Length: 139
Image (cartoon, rainbow, N blue to C red):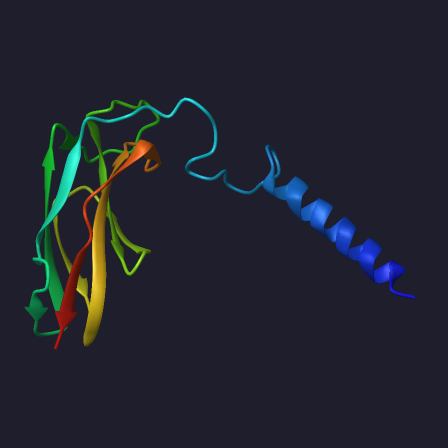
């Protein structure tokens, strides 16, 4: 009685898996594939500070980067000491630029912020280079 539904579900799952696999049209995961280089970079969120209370509708974010530099071009030529900064607000990617400073729009609430130094192709290094998380509040 339920056999056609089960068969349909299996066929749809197989088609979805094939579409997401190599050559299937979907972008590969940033961590997919072997051979991602490591980076000596050390990244930290300098501003806002841990526990800071911010007023207004933007937060000014300042990131420090050691042992590497931010480059303003996207490239598949990966150099472990060159890349971009990604910012995550409450684990959602909110920024992908070529700077160590950015104003982010915010609403009242408590947020978790962290930065990641990624390769020039915007994919992560292996292991990933994350800052410690900073929790701040907007009033």
